[in-house]
Length: 467
Image (cartoon, rainbow, N blue to C red):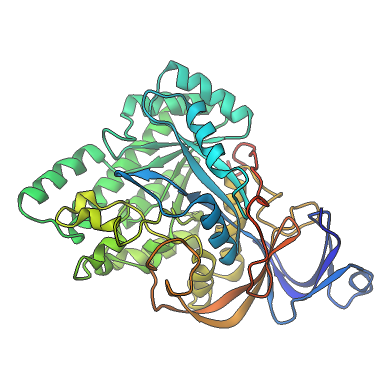
């Protein structure tokens, strides 16, 4: 275990408070906080003093939606758990929750074991797992109970991707009924995949093969329709629902309506939907393929409604859906047929900085930044207050953040294992300077001082965010 450290003189920001305070760290945890300059703070002694004057001291980010090494479309996401969690640390994220995958015809346990094998001993920061349920049957439903008991408390289902991850309404209802009993949380990819496949086939038959057609066939109305259907199925089952990667204003409206009815329905969006648009999908020379993800990027006018949803708490979480594929050799699989472009883009390293830029731009407050990026994801997925805040007893996952430093986002300088940046050339104000994970320095004044295997698997309790 690490020795005592004191972080002096910074502005400590959590979801609920901002205070100039010194932070005492002992045995990998927050031991105490005291207002800077007071006798209590002066009494903190430690082997190591970290000067945070003029900087923010914030909880490490919790990215509740990543896909390291995900098999998709005949290839694999290019970040391993080693490269992906190192990049997360560089971006101020100290916990990821990745998705273990059940393949059709296999058990949940086999899928979970496979993902444990990929991650164990390789992670720079702490990690947990959600479980993708691709094959709902009586055995699977029983296994869901066992997984909840051992700390895998959320299950993802897909209304999209027929023939791969797709569940029909009956399978979804059964899984929701089970989660209503065992305390699990169903996470839903809400797009009408059956209808989308028809539109894909028709577009290709017309010779519409470029990346921009990926956005045109995956219509916002089909995201809204699936979101509505998922909400009503969850209501019938008496289960809470978390809708992942919400991209369209029509889907936000469905979530807002459900929440106005008092339902435990939650929504997540991602930086790509807040900062990018169909303009990117339409970039020439197949460059648009870099921005192919599902749900797809939307026209710019959707962005204002997503920001509004984050301010009104109709959307509670910003995760990345980090799922990188290299342009060369991976995205290029879809030249001449947009439906063969692997879906996903890189972002685990950019999320905290992009959301700080949103503070600078006036979209959200500083505390809301911490709420949507750290505290709420930790509460939503049963990690709070161990993760997501700075309070005595919490893990010492702490970021020293320079709110004045300027940077230009580029693949030249990022640490994700992918050959392009979705935000290439974007100027940002604010940058991660130092990162501690359970009291250990992982990034020290812009140098990587962590190591693979420091990050440990973290079991989770059930959702702590229910009404």
